[in-house]
Image (cartoon, rainbow, N blue to C red; front, side, top):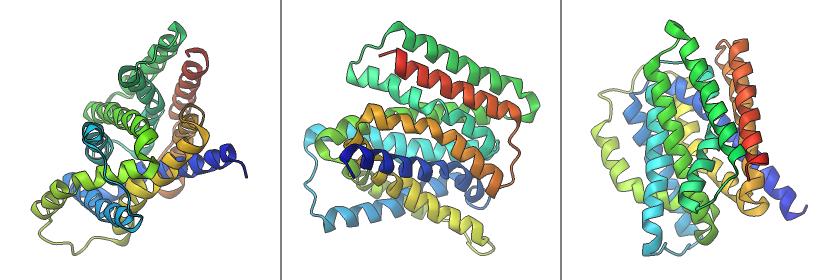
Length: 287
């Protein structure tokens, strides 16, 4: 198997793992406080990340890498998990997954800001159209959805896009999975302290699905998914393998429907497809 094919396979595995994050968070947040869920999953993943770094005796990041690691930590360790956990108290995971269609676009925009890229005008045409589609969908739901939940999801997409773009840039020098591991370790003291402070009075009565969901978002969403994802980006190229993210809404909707029995309306499917077309167009014709 050549390096490019291996990169696509690893990237696809990463996307499939990430696709289960929102449905799992939706289940977990029914039993756990969203702040506690955010910090405990980061603490668990941070301990595992520290173990990996020690086992493989990875070199420490330089001072010039610290700011980028802080941005990664704020984006994907704290920001996205917390904002989505808060959002999923107000909206279904199926509804929230529509917004994930904007994640590749958000990542590309921060690639422009942080990486100095200059896309063609076609890029901005597709970008604006995709954003209008998502905004129009959110507004069309009226009382069936929550403006607060939609706002939180949009904020989550922004900070996650920043974290992805910064992590992709840093992985060129620091290494793929090492980026998320060091970001988790950097966050570990704060997340560990907050875990203790937000520890619930009792954990009795919490059903198995909530515990399994906590395990999933801690092990797979926060660490294992990034191992495959960053390895895929390194092997197959960030621009090429990054397009696999466009499949994430489809996988997520399928999981929300199959596992949680949440309704997936034709409007959700149509908007998801339309957003994917816009993001694909931005990537193909805007560079």
